[in-house]
Amino acid sequence: MTSRAKLDSPSTESLFDFLYVDRGRIASYFAQLFDTGVLRSLKTTATSEQSIAEEGHAGFGRIAGYKAKDEKAIGQSTEREFDAEWAVPLNVIDALDERGMISRDVTSAAMGQLVLLSGTLQVIDMRMVKELWKPIAAQEVGNMPSATSQERKKKEEARKSLGSLTDIIANLPHSVQVKLFSDDYQLWATLEPNYIIGSTADLGLKHGMQIQGTWSMLGVLDALPELPSAGEPNLRMPKVPSQLDVAFLKMFIELRKILGRGYFDYGVTPVAILREVGLRSSTSAQPDPVRSASHAR
Image 1 (cartoon, rainbow, N blue to C red):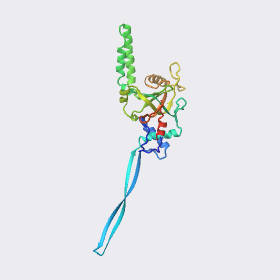
Image 2 (image 1 turned 120 degrees about the vertical axis):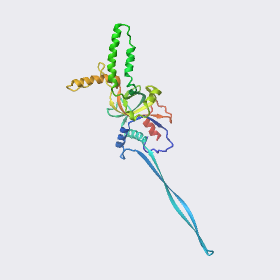
Image 3 (image 1 turned 45 degrees about the vertical axis):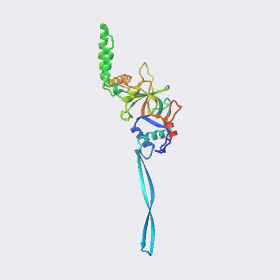
Image 4 (image 1 turned 90 degrees about the vertical axis):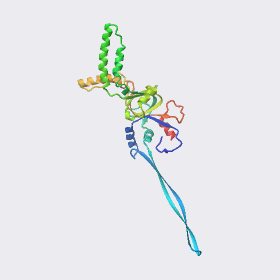
């Protein structure tokens, strides 16, 4: 993939399907990588000239006469303007790769480094269940046995406990979450809804949680797996923690168990999620979109 590729080249060998593009980060990277600033559009101008011959006749009766020929050059200019929105992400990824700024091994990558990894993709739109927590809890309680007085007592306690918990959860921000995983690693991330290409509802109805095919994610590695001690992560606290510090820490530990990143997952801030589609067969089980595009252009 190079920025020197012709837009109308007939030799394209690869196409790329984007599921997600963080346009803000892509624009920021582009401005830092290229001196010309952020590319918004491309314009080409072609000029052609055409000669037109004109003939004229003049005479003086039967005495004499002449014929004159005059050629005029007429210029024509054609201007074409192209939307460069989708060329920008590919050019940025290509430039980052050429500069060695992308790691393909998450286990050796440093915090804050860009990683490009491929695997199986899961998308979970938690917004779809925001209003369903109470019905789900009510169904769970309803399925509990209530034949004896002790069972009825446990059922009532569960109703109150789950009712309070669902009230809290329903008022929390519900995000779009993704997991990208292979046999060697598992990534967890959230997506900004405005940068998703298409509809998560459509993906859910078509695939369920797991999107078919092999996908690649470019992102910033910003959280490493944790080795929990006695079932909890090892977290640092202020030297003199306040009661509020302790209370919020306990609350967010519990909320993370329900809605957040798993202790053994890598945390990534996605920049782009894409896959190579249709025009070229590949024998690789884990295609690399950057190298595929470089060969294609």
